Each structure stands twice: as structure tokens, then as C-alpha cells.
Length: 93
Image 1 (tube, one colour):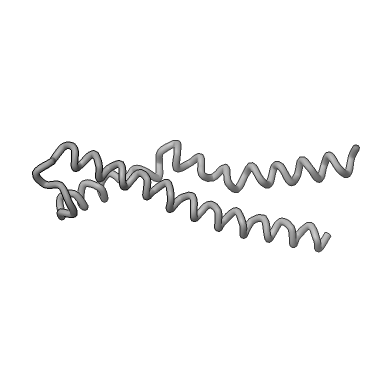
Image 2 (cartoon, rainbow, N blue to C red):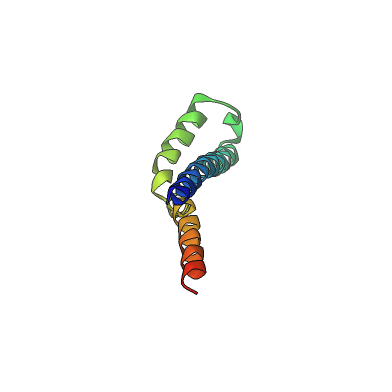
């Protein structure tokens, strides 16, 4: 039983690290896309201006409620389901 608890603990730590890295990566992709949208719409104000930073900040507020952001939570669900399925399959064959 102790080995199972240790496995779950290490799995959750690995999932949390992977989730944080994925979240940072996806948010940076969205931020770059918003910066490109700003530059395309306002070619005279391209670059790192306060208006551009405000636009990106306002647009990123709703990003946590999008489907892509919520699908990141599958990082916690899918590996746990896989481990539970493997354990079930091995023990009750």
C-alpha cells in the first residue's frame, strides 16, 4: 500500500509540474498571437507601447475560461485513469 501511495504522490507532482509548464507555454502562445493582432491592426503603434500592453492584458483576462485552458486539466485526469486501468487490468486478469 505504501508503494501505491508513493506512486500516486510522484504522479501528482509530475502532473503538476507538467501542467504548469504547459500552462506557461499556451499562455505565451496566446500572448504572442495577441501582440501580432495588435501590430496588424495598428502598424503605426507597433512595438512595446502601453496601449499594446493594455490590449494584451485585457484580452488575456478571459483566456482562463476558454476551452483550451480548461482542457489543460486533463493533464491530471488522463494519467490517473491510465494508472488505475493498468492496475485493474493487471490485478483482475
